[in-house]
Image: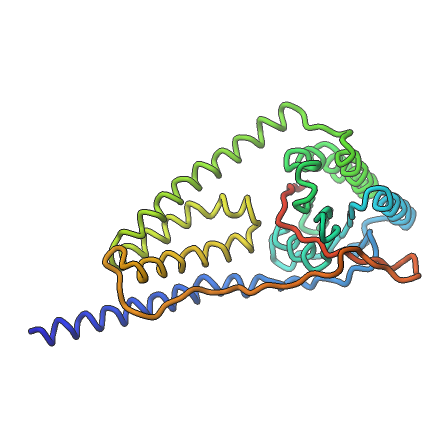
Length: 307
């Protein structure tokens, strides 16, 4: 009888370990399939109109305006129009482009990306964390709604992009403020994310003390509730990575400290590694048409819209 119980326990742990491995594959698959799947072009100019929606005069005028603004403030603003999002969300595409281009100075993270996808009728203002105080999510939302969208609906792409860029510059300089209506609208969404995050955090903590497969289920449920807050804080791709690490951290703690009557050996968690950015300042060649990012990173905020 004792041998039979031991055999059953051994099989149960084998099934549990197999479940953990498949759950890892299940979580990591969308991460690896989504990261860098968008064909990010090489950054050469401040205005990259690959969708061909801007006139040459507008491109040149915006290029000079953004160059002058960077000379005065060191803030880097780039405009990119894409003919296709390749079945990805504009939020994920913006993150990939921003991180690949490394907009903003490394020590300041003061970059901004305005991306427009005319075929999908989507747009987004993505802000480096160093400028979140000067260009908030609320202000980015207002710029999209009040400055860009009306012109786009009137099929005036030149006017919409120009108005958006001018409003971004004015906001960073402290000359553009959100209305009371914008503050109220945005605030309710943030409250929902925080509430969901609190529920998820509590459930994830409780899962530490729930034994067996039930503990895994409670952990998954807790992280699902926590996920919207993680997205708001880190963006969708990095939020997924954080959620994965959090899941395996809970499993790791349960096994190390024997919480929830866990036990067994082995296990661990995924180390996503790190990457290094470029130099402290951006560099360009002698040609006025060449330009590159300065080593900044995203981890900031922004807003999206459509028309």
